[in-house]
Image (cartoon, rainbow, N blue to C red; front, side):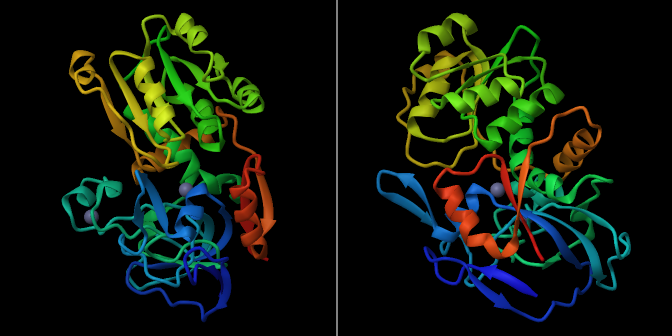
Length: 348
Ligand SMILES: [Zn+2]
Ligand SMILES: [Zn+2]
C-alpha cells in the first residue's frame, strides 16, 4: 500500500510503499475511498502544539512514533477482516471513527474514548488515512453512511463531529437564547449548519473576515459581526449569550467569549490555535461561568451525527476532491489559508 508519511517532524510528507497489512482478531482492513485534510494534520506534521508563553507540547511527548501516516477523516470499504470480526462483511463501507481509546480504562468502557489517557487515535498514534489502505482495530468503528458520497461523508469524522460534540456539551437552549460561534472557518460553518439539529437558540457569529461572515449568514446564522463591533453584538444579545463556542482558541477569542456569556453561561473551547489566557478569577464564581474544552467527539455521537446527515435535513459541507499524491500541496494550501471547504484526498 502507498502511504504519505511524516518521516521527520516539520518536513514534507514522504511517499512510502508497504505490503498491505493482514487484519488479525477483530481488526478490519479498509480500502480507503476518501480522507479529509484537517488543520490538526498540520500540527501533527509539525510535531508540536503551542501552549503559549513559549511552552510547547510535542507529539513525541504524547507518544507519537515516527514514521506515521496522518489523516483521520476516513471513509472506505472492508476488503479483509480478522477471524473475530464477525459483525462486518467484505464490501461494507462507512466512515471510520478515528478517536479510539485503549478500550480497557473506565472512560473507554463508558464510551468516552476521547477522555482515555492512553488513546490510539488513527492518524496520530496509529497510522491514518493519507494512504490507500488502513487497519481499523475493531469493526464497531465503521459507521455506515448509506448511499452518501464517501468524499462528502469523510470530514464528518472530525470537522463535523467536533462541531457537533461542542454543541451537545451546551445545556438545552430556548428559541430566545443566543449561542455565539467565534470563527467561521470550516468547523465553525459546520457548527452553524448543525446547530438547528441540537439547539433552539439563535446563532451569532463573530469573525474578522467579511467573506466568512457572509458564508456564516448563508449557512443559517442569525447575525454575524466583526470582533470590533462589540457594542452592536451586546445590543443584539442583551444580558448575554447562553453559551459561546471558541472555534479559534486564541487568547483574544476566548477572552471575548467569556465576556459575552450571561450568568450561568458556558464557554466551550475547541480551537487549537494556541496561546494562554488571563482569567479574572472572582468573575468565575460571581457569574457562575463554566469554561470547558471539547475534543473531537465520541463514537455514539458520530453515529447520531451520521443519522442526521443521512436524513437530508442538514445542508452538507462542500468538499474539494484531490488525488492522494497531492497531500503535501493540500497541506501547504491549508496552511496558507487558501482552502475554501474541505480538501479530500482520493487514492487513485
Ligand atoms: Zn481533524
Ligand atoms: Zn482508555
